[in-house]
Length: 168
Image (tube, rainbow, N blue to C red; front, side):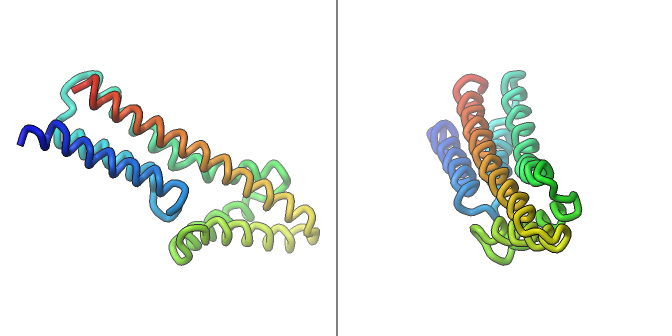
């Protein structure tokens, strides 16, 4: 039983976290950072968060999860806004992206989001070049958001490993 709590459970949790990291890129409908955070919660529940260092590791993982869960929408929206897209268009595009993620898993969310932004901006400005620039900017923002969330996910896993080895 001792080997299970010392090795087995941490490995299972690490596997869950790696799955969360994988889902950030390949299964966008799944909240990868929340999955990584859930692994940390399970680890905390199983082993207890008994030291100050453990609380610091857990708090840092939690803050990264919250920030990372908001960052993609903020980056995508502000990126499109810089090229002249209206906040209404951006909001509708982000809602369309959420719907697309549910009904068209994998890349349906981003495709529907970009199509919605282009369509709304085209009809708003009656200029396909402006609409395309806003759409291209939102797509670039999406790419940067993925990079940022992956980085946050890797940091969260690194914090878990720090917690595992240094704060138990």
